[in-house]
Length: 408
Length: 88
Image (cartoon, rainbow over all chains, first blue to last red; front, side, top):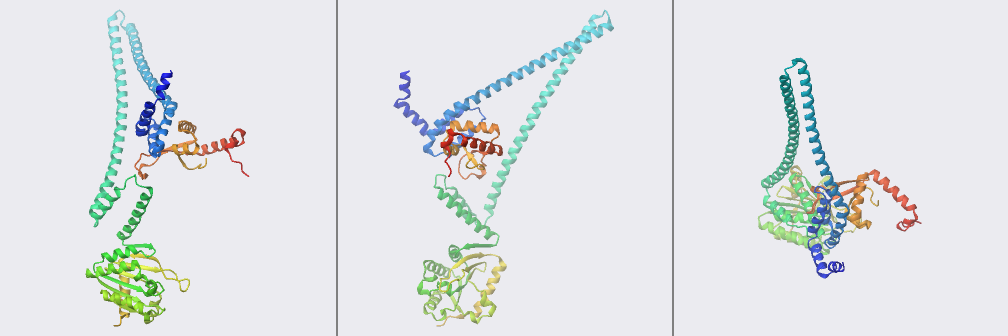
């Protein structure tokens, strides 16, 4: 006994246990779960739970399940075995009872036939025996045929159920295959299929070992992209909180023919004059100018109307300098003084840029609540509706005609 | 009973209650038999991780009432007084 205890508490045993539970807790758990009957839901439940448990805790948790398997699994298995045995015995008893019933029925009917025929035939006992044996034999065959028919019916019902199940599974599987093939078909038909494939491939490379934050970030980015794609494909509107700078840069970098922009000097200058750090001197403004320069190199025609405000922009040398810089880059620049416009038009002007006469990028300034505060863009939106874009082009043409060219 | 209407998983419940899983699962099994709990499996289509669906347990109305009664009785019993913080 002491030797056994020593063996159990020895270092080799400890290391073997550590190896088994530490390296292969899943394998050990699988072995432990053999204590449960084959279709017991606890098997799948514990295997699934193991995946949700932190790796460090798994060995101890698996060891705990030995207790559970002994306390719950083995009794269930014994009960299942007992049930199986009982079922088998019940079936055998039923078959035995059926055979005895058939024999008794045959004997009693044959006996009755013998008695009746002996009353009528008299001394010709041979006839009575032959008739009773014949009728008894026929009855036995009929009984076996009836039982065979019953068993055949049971088998047919079982098969029908099996086929129905298989059919359901095939239908379910086909539906999944159909969905997948439809999705692949749509990807193949898409105008941006190479990009879509790249997106799917790169997204699929994100494995489960990555940090949760990475998963959440990737998920939110794909959701944002998905919303953008929905808006683009439905030719609707996409709204951004803030300035939507990435979209503005993206559109500028990809424009092929024209960029028609209306810019409010007050907003571009940040309300402080360009020297105070307006849009065009900011990091974004520089990248925006660079993107426009590259667009000009692609032979894109860029027209910009600078709308003056009542803060003395018309004579602000810094602002005028910015207009000149843009003109020198090759942008067609005009200046618009709102008082020269009809009264109605003065009231509802806002920043917009039409790219390739197809997409209008419009920004809504925040309410200027306190005088002297910096004007900012509250919301930007992409408008793709053909009618709305045509309206913006009409507006631009009207403002362009009313604006004057830069002096000098 | 801290989340009487929520879904409960074996491992989390074991951690939160401090009851070993070797004791907890047979309790779950008995509560299922008594109709205090219902169980179900996560929908594989909603899983974001690569793992099999887990089995969850949910208290039934009967289970909530019965467990509430058990808790009330335990609160009155001096042997379990230490388990329930005294309210002012």
